[in-house]
Image (tube, rainbow, N blue to C red):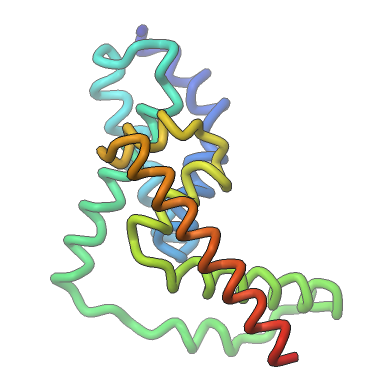
Length: 167
């Protein structure tokens, strides 16, 4: 693959990679930084990638960048996000607030999943990768991947049921 085609690849997959990283780390700014790191690494190693496998390869690069980020994060002090959540937003309307609350509920449910189940769910259900591609990215067998995604979906349904009972 040629280096000059990276611009085309970037345009095609930038939003998918961003959403994947955003869902993994839960932080907009960290996701942007990780996305930048992903495409920087892709630029360096683009010749090693087969053209028909570019999307799964980019997700693997993104996942590896996320793992590196988590390792570094474990060695540093993390500040609380509560300050930013308390700031007023000028565009807040009832529908925006309801939508935001719903996404936060979903995010909490997804974040409570074990890491492997969360990654399995995000790769297939949120980013549209096939089971085979996602299992390759996670370095697990296809049957193990199917078990992970089944259990993740089962836990999300259970969390939704509990939430509906509480309301």
